[in-house]
Length: 380
Length: 91
Image (cartoon, rainbow over all chains, first blue to last red):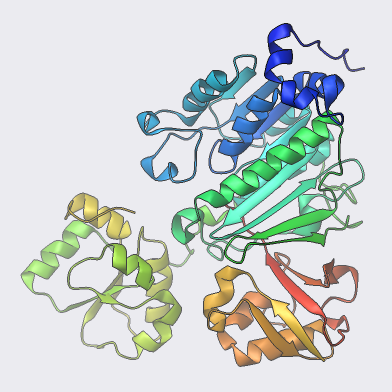
């Protein structure tokens, strides 16, 4: 049986007064929030606004699972952290900000990755989970743990200008596997680091997650159960589509998933199994200086070429590679590069399959070239 | 039948920048085939080599998941709307 709801002290009544005068929320709703425990997985783009609003709203306890450190490229969207925090663990930076926002908050930091060994215990110890992760592997893990523990999974994900949100794994509702029984193969969907994301988009979607979490905890409104909210930020269109519970779902339908398993199907482990040989940036620079007959192909997209490029390269975007291959000189050795060395492997294989055996991929891409050869190149 | 098919922005470069397109066919599968015929580079993003939907790209016909009807064999009417929703994982 749940313990009785905690009471609000004088300072809390003052702080939450705009909630208390909402008849739907009232003192009872606010006491429910105070008596709640939320597990927030990830303090990144989605986790930032979610954590801020959950803390501000008076959720009694938040546990944060985050192992990453703050990078300057996070700050375009991860509003929980500041410039002074670059290089610090995100968990610590989040703690400082959240306790400054609301000193009534009880906060536990888990400076670790969510994995099959800790997920179920963590989820069981909370009333609901807010999924702010950034990869398919952890999303399936969060979902399965929520189904097994019987805790709602407040879900959102984002990519470029598009976002999705729903509430999965409630007693009668569908789960994430009902919607997506299996993830895309590695490499099919680029990560946000590769594909980009509009900074404010996780702000929108993370705030929707906080809204759904607060409604569930306070017991008000109609939760986003059995519905998937689709956000198109470019067209600024919001739409909800139906998500049905799949009776054959191995997680919540047939319940054949009885324990957690880590599945390494994430795009971030996306290098293809077959690979072309690599060349290091230093070796490439040496060979260019020596005057070797090399064709240097940049397989990134034109907007990335605008940001930075290696001198002497030719733009041949992966999306148009088939046409570019026809213009290649078979007498010259080909070096392909991209941002970090993943897409260039894909391009290298495609070029080799088209009948050019002498293809090398630049290890670490233009980023490592900047580190090792030409520090004047901008990073992105 | 002429229906509108909405694709996510990430696939728009494969359709000349359009995210809302008109396509025709008697079933969802035929509509997808029509689109794939006109924009060959999008074909592999919408269906597998056997012409079947992927488990990570969901098709909604008038906001309802076609897997709970007849999949790609689900019949369409004039003026229907198909929305394509691929799995994304960013956070």
